Image 1 (tube, rainbow, N blue to C red):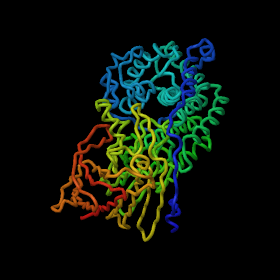
Image 2 (image 1 turned 90 degrees about the horizontal axis):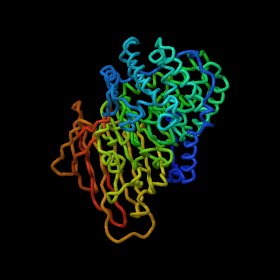
Image 3 (image 1 turned 60 degrees about the vertical axis):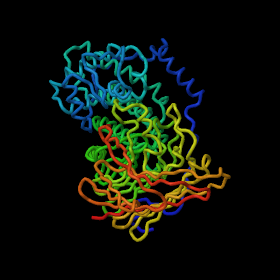
Image 4 (image 1 turned 60 degrees about the horizontal axis):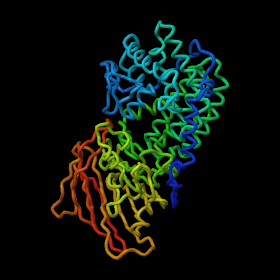
Length: 574
């Protein structure tokens, strides 16, 4: 292995990846969680929330991130808008909420403060922020209930309240100011007892970030901060692999945790204190892993229910962390492989789906790929199952999680990992065998999964070779007998290549190839052998969560008991 590849962390040779149980939370876990939330309503818990009323914050940290100007302008126009759903501020009724779950999360987390501060000066923004704050306090300040008092939302709320304190604490109404600060202190005491009970992953990390932030910025919080730092370190250990990828395998969760930790670090800066080593080390691992699943334009690819994020936004997030590193080319545990040569970037999902209890909206995407040529996306996944606008029907959102919504092989019109009606993942891919080699500047990846072995008696093996100049990607998709007796007959298969937005496909005369024209005018040729090529309609969820009509190349055929081998190639023509 060359020194360059070693520095990129590429481990050549074979590796077997196994997934844990596909089960979600056990019945005992669900009962315990329900009982714990019922205790929130008891007099004992109300007593625990009592304490000194803080008169002010010790310091006010900066928010290192810019908000969304469109959402901010909506607030200036008197509406709270998020992912296609909106409600007039004048009609906000926290006692009788009538809005989508994403909008509720946006409201209760007070993430809208960032959007408002991006477009409004303090004199303009304060009345809007105070109006929503008073409405929230009226219903939720004294009543401990879901979803407002979940540990995750309290963690996020503390981060946003403190970072945007000038918007919510500039009032001359001393009763109102006291109410805000007292509610902040009550929320911190609630987190002291509930942060570690939050679901593992983003939610628990957000909760502990809130504990530490309160410890740093509410007077007399040093003991709380020390406990919070221990809790955050354990939460990171349970949520983030050594290679920097999140165990939920969702790049959007990766972005979320990076932003939470970066906001928390600003609270330390405001106090002129050094952040704990665990926080800095986590950011140092997570940023390269995030960049590893980004395309040539630095924009995020679409995996595990998430849609794309524009490159400008990713650049802003990375810059805020202060981490300077090259994209991780091989995330051994997280499961994403990055092949980058010339102007081409290929990203491959080379691991089983996430364990159900660790992820919401997991996808059956094993061995799917995305490919970009410079700043343009050539091959994509439909994406966006958990980031689409509210107007997209639930059935379509669930369809975006299927294997067919990803650029990979589908056997028998079936998912490689089952997706249950309740949204959880079932049986399917349990093992992925992986081998990678770098030679003569070219990148070679070979991976196989057993998701179709039990039902159809086939292993799916995909081999990819990206040329050293990035102008050609060769692939082989094989269905190999899995060693158990199969029913007599053939099984239909389809290899789908969803094309990027604006990519136009035109078939050649022999029907075995297609010419792909990118929006810039660049041409690529796709050719296959071992199946019939057709061009069909598809869709892609864009960075705004909206569906965009696209096309897809479909190589279809039937596999006999002995298996099948389909070869294909993408070659840049200009």
